[in-house]
Image (cartoon, rainbow, N blue to C red; front, side, top):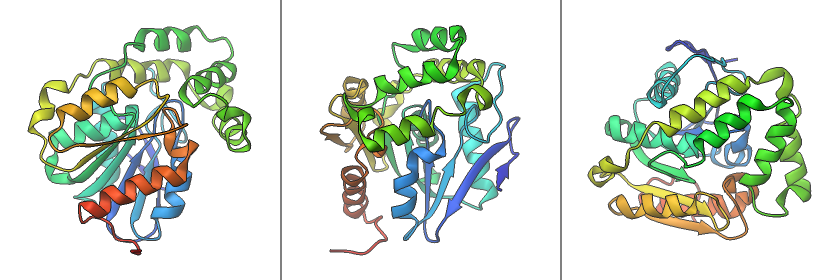
Length: 267
């Protein structure tokens, strides 16, 4: 199993397929399996690298203070381990923050950035999230409630929603650290990149679900990035990539095709 040890946290990741690199960075409170559908589809044409960010999955779960820049360094360590010097980056929520910070700090590494629930600054709910995790007596139950806020109404009642709920909560009490996850929220909340967006020259796609709790922030962020495309998917929430993978993938493919970055079959 591949790990990067380039930083103070050991970071797990999986690779699938061959071709131009496509790096996926997940959201709270998921792990790299948030991208299960995208891994299956895009690994036919790309070298897909899906990372467990610190605090989740099989990566280390540090409880001491760290920053979004530290989390970016984790992902860059994975890229270095795989010999990747240039890639398409796709991130969701805090993962989109990591992708955006990479674009701003290392534009030479980015062919394009896809920001799911994209927000150039931290959520206004940061303290609520931190307090919620730190005060949770049953982490599994707390994350179940948290997931309900991130998806469209009724999604968790569907078969796919039931699978998502089970997959990302069943081992939470044994495998996750509430303190580490709280640090992730603090790290994201402390990083505001808004005043740097006007200088972006690479293609950027922001994707939101229509009832996404970050739709307003995504709309604002997209309006500040020159040439940015903003797609809003109906009947999906913050985790639109797993709620409606068909619509999500088609939006992503169209963006890549329009920017001469699509390496799959053509219609």
